Length: 577
Ligand SMILES: O=C1O[C@H]([C@@H](O)CO)C(O)=C1O
Image (cartoon, rainbow, N blue to C red; front, side):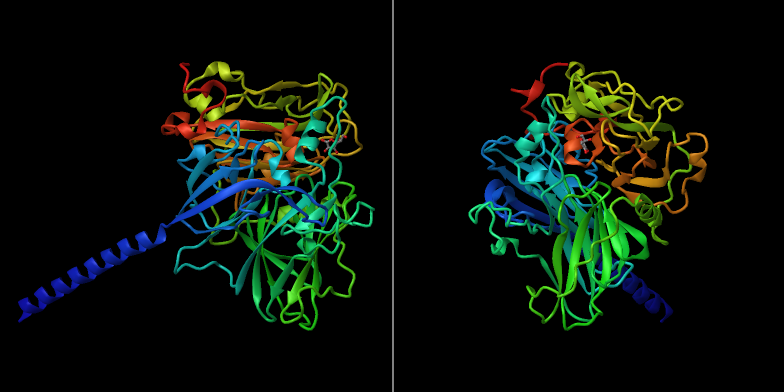
């Protein structure tokens, strides 16, 4: 009897084990989906802020389609360049491209440009849940409207550490009426012609330029439905997760919703220890999730606004409508739209930056020490009469052969083999004044990092060349997230400031501002084999040389696909080193 019982028990255990195994296999096959997209990039006449101009679209839209995926999925984007006369590359901003550095979409770094008429396929895994972006990474093409959102949700059955009823993605932008070609030409000419302040601010691709400036209805038509304000419809009583991303060309923004507080819960794909704000400061390349509750008087709509901060604004505020259902989405509130905080209040912005900490229960503790410290002094310079931006007095230029190919195949003659400096003259440099000698050099040399080491990067801001200000610069790192260890005003003190680092619960991000006359300290692990750009996300500043490139673990990078080749030294195949 006992034996029969044991036998049955054994069979039962085996059955349970088999069914568990089957369900595990089932879960893993259900989880890892392939999300396929077929996109065509082309120019179309559009009027996002009522002013008609050529806009770079994806499948006829700007912002382009939102990529919706679950953690662990593989995204495949077959991208056709139908821009007719312009090259293309698309960067998946915030996706680390582990094992696929050739899919990072950075022209000159990870691939040759996609030529007009060509189709290029990007394939990568979205390994973490969160809010990300995509945008053109060729010349200043992003500014022409080629961008969109990536939303990575948790696998089925897993839930976020906060509750909400609905999820919405909103991209903030600023908008120029001149073509990107005109803007880029002005920046690289003698005399220098600055892009100036943008003509309008867009919220989810819509803005309002004042057409009364006598342009004629064929150019600017205030009643064009294309430029009716974006309406975010909410059901009274419900909680909304707003995934807000900024892809401004230049502007740092403040975002606010009339009468509604926002609880910040996510930054660049990482959970934030929740904190409540009336306005959200957001810099180009950053993403945040905020929760809002539709718990105000439901008989009316409310204004959503954006305004420029950190530069003296000359652009009307962005306007959208928070539409309480069932009010009409076009019904403008009769109230005055909130104007946001004063543009020049640096300490308010610094305070918000310092409030962003990693959420309890989700903290990834940083290594407590680093192997290398690199200090990047950000300055505006002059090189042979051209206005440029530099890092440690070196202004970045692209080589003809993408670094990933040149480094992997040891094509040493393709770029300067001398690495740029790890620091500047800490003792004598006065960050508060226009420099005595504005001259700098340019180079396409790169920083080579020892694989798996911990690297600290200190961004040091300074006075610009001929204005009366120091400007905010949002820096974006490809291929990694970094821990934000600290921010401070003035000149970074390499002996004492590291003692004040937050090594307990720093947030991890991929984009971070360095505030006016201030420093920002970051730490990351050089553990992602590849070649990665790190640059100011202001499109004109990057095109004026404000960036660097890191290489790590190139020997661990697999065979490069031939689809990324075809330019520079790889015209007609790979040359010998
Ligand atoms: O790169 C820039 O150039 C101008 C100004 O410094 C010179 O006109 C400006 O505001 C920038 O951000």
